[in-house]
Length: 399
Image (cartoon, rainbow, N blue to C red; front, side, top):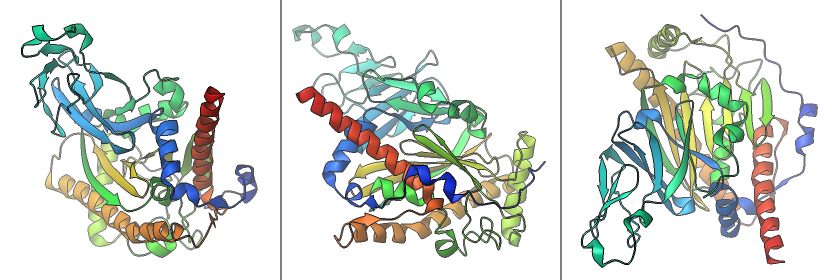
């Protein structure tokens, strides 16, 4: 089963003028002070994607996520009761980070410093010579972090009292996420990368297609570009509160190379078995503040962009699968898709870092977005609106 491919029709520029046409200032991409404001206005308040249920397959499973921008280490645990809970990975005795391993299985967690031990609910279970302390065990539980699930994806919120639920934050995207292959995925493959660039500059690269013709001419093989759409422009944009999505264009005349065709046929077969259409113009979800999800059952991937510093970013790219590999051809197809996407992304690194160096050189004060870079403009507008609202909020507090 395939989805009919519509002829390419670019999104009209007149539909995008309401986002603004003015140049965008360079300062927010370089200034450490602005980065600090983003931390407090966005990353310590928003719902953040940090994993998937496949990370926690059974009771006792746990993962640790480092969120450098918030100076936070988060321990996420599936308890004996099957409930997923999240805590600050910080012992409540003297603040030592509790768990060093990135993942594993455990029913209890002991601090390496003084052996305070906590259960999978975060309660203090035991502490040496505790009767000499001037506090009750009940007051020494691990500090909880809000955690919710949507579409099999794990989200946390570092705000002590989030002002909206995950469902409210995602809006209509919640229902869409619940219907995607990731919702029932049981396996994944991933790779991480680090890049010397501001997180917004990195994020922008993956939500505009203007560069495809020049940077990815060989690696894409013409799958996302063609004579009628040489830049691989999207066929549809949609703006949903702080989030964005676009319908990506697939070249109907694309002919894969022999080895690529073997992998793609196996992936298509997988999608059909799962009841999903294998081909067609898919949607690319750009979820605020730093998460992407591609809705294609053919290439079911996610991409999370984690700010590390004002000019340093870490990315996590994942393909999600239904079940473990059941044949050599399936293993090959899955490995090929991950490697192929990694090769494409590797082509972006040099130009993104060159852009960061250029922006921070002082040579220019502004950058420019054209109409088909509308997602970038909407993203910048949303980030800056959150920062300015936070600045105004703090100003009112001081008055």
